[in-house]
Length: 294
Ligand SMILES: C[S@@+](CC[C@H](N)C(=O)[O-])C[C@H]1O[C@@H](n2cnc3c(N)ncnc32)[C@H](O)[C@@H]1O
Image 1 (tube, protein in one colour):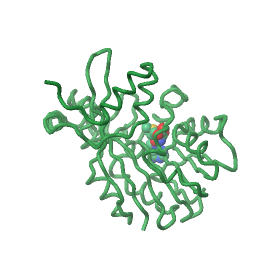
Image 2 (image 1 turned 135 degrees about the vertical axis):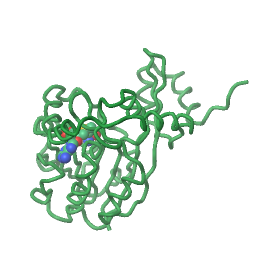
Image 3 (image 1 turned 60 degrees about the horizontal axis):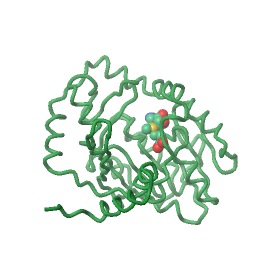
Image 4 (image 1 turned 90 degrees about the vertical axis):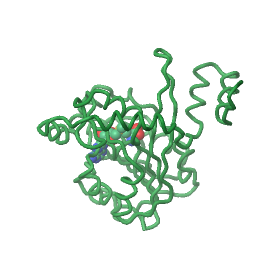
């Protein structure tokens, strides 16, 4: 008997029938993510693997935490603009950017601009500040063919210690985005980063958040080699020395709410990716949220 298929699976099958494999993949990436539908058994398996992991020696934990900025800078020196794809899904998930009004925005941890340039292209009345603590990334943003003074201002800033108000007027921004950035910051420095962001937002301004979630396949992969890459609970170091934290809803909500934000939305979202070479499906699990500054 054939199992019932979801509306999304049906749409994907129809798309795949009409499009080339590359077009079908691109179209799939543009569809909304589903609420997390990872089965309880898979989540239980992930939890068991992660619980067996243990942190590396304190000397290395401190070294990786202290060298985060240097290692991200080396990452951009090595990869330049080749690593991340443009994030064309932003307006679909965060409709605030579609608004045809003069928004003043900031992207924290902007990398080489995979988020900012698609948004600037679609909304001609929007002004975007963009900061990152990796000087090479900011240099690449400034060299981008669409970088225009008057529409965009990119600058180097470590969110955990350099006041954003040195560059951006206090309480002046309508929207801030944090896309896979707070996961690069150790838990003990998160509050400082969020407080820094809050200073430049208007009351009623929105913070759009997307990041890695607990029990994501990448976390299970890290913990499958116990004692090799874990620095703290849910915090790991990649081979290139950059950090990756996996958030729970409770953790991220409590960081923002303690700093005076109200949660509008905060959900786990899920994407199944297929590794055709190895014939396996991989459950990616992210956290997506919107917080309003009171
Ligand atoms: C995974 S990348 C995401 C880049 C970009 N937001 C995007 O979506 O393509 C994480 C970025 O956060 C930056 N980052 C990490 N910690 C930071 C900090 N404390 N202050 C500023 N930027 C930081 C890194 O340099 C890196 O560019």
